Length: 363
Ligand code: 8OZ
Image (cartoon, rainbow, N blue to C red; front, side):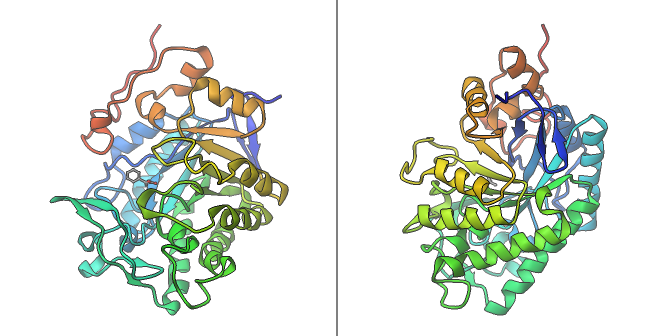
């Protein structure tokens, strides 16, 4: 029987424990969307995690939908991230970069030449984005031309190259939470009539082309993917999510991806959301078809996490909010030390406050 505090191997990458730092948007990049020295401190403080997954990082300016999120498409951003990974490695840690394109969950404010955001179809998301003037409706997107899709795949591949140059041990494709990859998968947001829309096979085409491109840059066991099959955040919806995601995870498993990172239930919400989307079945299909491991996420506490690893329902557990407030979360869970409580008012702003100033446990 495995335990949460034992080492695990994802392909050739040994992680000393099964506790993963979840990707967490913290909105502290500079004007050029570069991680700063503060990010170096923040991630290094958390280097005892079995694996750190970075905050979502846009692969291009077009892929941005939030203020002060870091990118991985300029030299300055790569340099900034290199400082982070060097420091995390020096502290004994391992780090994965999450590759992000928001698609229609954006606003003209963020886009090159204030153009409309791009999406599979010209359907506006019923969701809000935060721009300097406050919360606004997402802008009306334009549908990507068929010929543009190959360019977009190349942008992902370039971002993966940049991640490699920045020293990341792994990359994770952000396929969750209603962003671009999820928009292509689901029939509510994808109403294309070309080879990238319609049947499940067609709707998976772009996401799988991206995965295949990433696996040309990193070995497949160093590539993970995050999915939220049951979630409906950011106007994500599908007429038959269980069939869709069953087929997708089978395809991903066949590619021998390093891990499937599942948000269980509703993102930032209840775990029992849409129970008909059988997540146990999705994990089983992914593993049986060749996928290397499963990371589970969403509202886990110590006892739930220990049980999930012991009963084999997940290989690793990703913690979000607890890692914001507890840089030494691994030691606290392992020894049963009390946890610091997170201050949600500083999740998305505030410099060092609520970012690098949470105390380590002192007996
Ligand atoms: C919280 C705030 C902004 C972005 C996601 C990247 O939902 C995010 C995100 C979360 O995956």
